[in-house]
Amino acid sequence: MRGSSHLAIGLITGVAVAGLVPGVPFSPAGIALAGFSALAPDLDHPSSRLSRRLGFTQQYVRWAFLAVAVSMAAYAYWQLLPGPDRRLAFTVALAFGLIGGAMQGETTRRLALLFTGLCTVLAGLYTGFVWLSMLGCFVCLAPFSSHRTYTHTLWAAAFWTYIGHLANQSLGWHGVALFAGGGYVSHLLADSLTKAGVKWLMPLVDISFKIPLIRTGSRSGNLLEVAICIGYALLVLALVVSRLQF
Image (tube, rainbow, N blue to C red; front, side, top):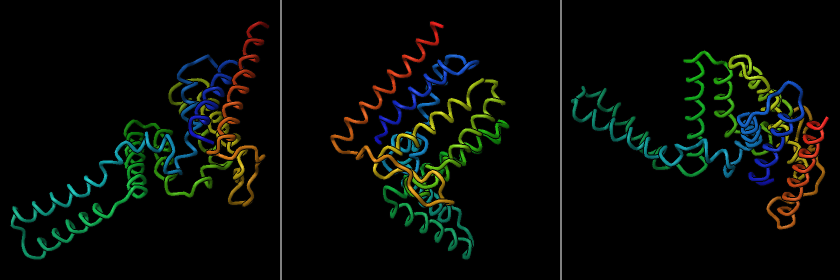
């Protein structure tokens, strides 16, 4: 499915959690979290909406490597280091320059997300929030897996939900695990409606579970995605209204 459809389904799932689960307050932040969680599995895809947003440093990664190379070379030249140290510094500078110059789109994207994830891990360690460090680990590792493999499994959904559970304990925000887990699972369910399906139990079972209704990217597939989103929204709306009446 397209990212826009996943986002819509995730947000609708957030409304369902907020409006139908007893004890969970109706929260715009929770609904937004469900939408964010619905995009998280596609961090393994180079063109995903969330990859582009979280990898905000992507366009600067190459220049950062080149800047390090120039800085290292300048330091070695102006500080008049002794022979062996100077040669080592120039070698390191050359290595950084070659790496930066050779980087292309996918490598740069992965490094950008790795950098973003590592910063999140460090922020979690600094603040003492374990869930934040675990979130950073997910962001670090997801770009290095093939599309619809490890991030599209029941285990990944459980891990994401557990992150929400820890955030719930740390922040005292009731329902975080439900918003996070519901949004994540909504992505897997939606992708199970495509012809490629989802390997929910990988690596234990290397079988795609699917109801092949949607060919992603085709005109008919796009129309069907819109119809599913509208139908899902109307169903959730009807259930929430009926609950409010009774």
